[in-house]
Length: 215
Image 1 (cartoon, rainbow, N blue to C red):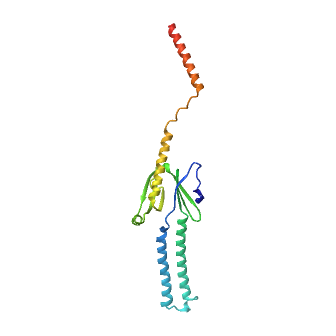
Image 2: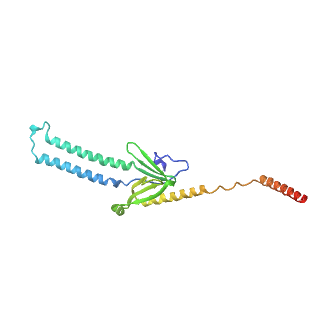
Image 3: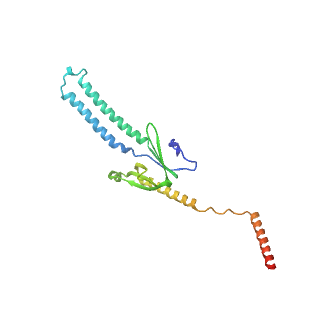
């Protein structure tokens, strides 16, 4: 499963149990805003070039060309904003292993944040109105000694699946810690050692009997 995540470097005994990405629909707000602003820019350009009379003597360049150039810049910037938002989604990855939670972000450069599952103290599932309607949300993870969420796995489709997988790994980590606290079992004695101990015990018993007879 690591082949799809070349940025992920795991310990030899660490294995991936869940992977995910933010939902692409998270860019809907950006796209809607860009569409509205672009429509306003184009509408304004049409209005100015068809309804407003400008004196060509006051403009060294054709007024219509200037207006449409400004509108084109606005539309182009909004297209770039939507494309950048999409790339941010595509370059965000969430990975849960049996040891850690990993969050990778960044388009031009990568940033990887990780939290050990054995340090997780609390998980919070957050859904707004549309999240409840379309079953998406964010799982915030807090660790020991932190004042708030240390890591947020956001805009997940079916966030309950991630939370359940994480809680399972947290329980497994707790069981491992409890096992480490138990005293190690005594090493088994080989046959030669047992015979030597028995011989010493017999000799001590014989010495004790002789001392008792003399007394």
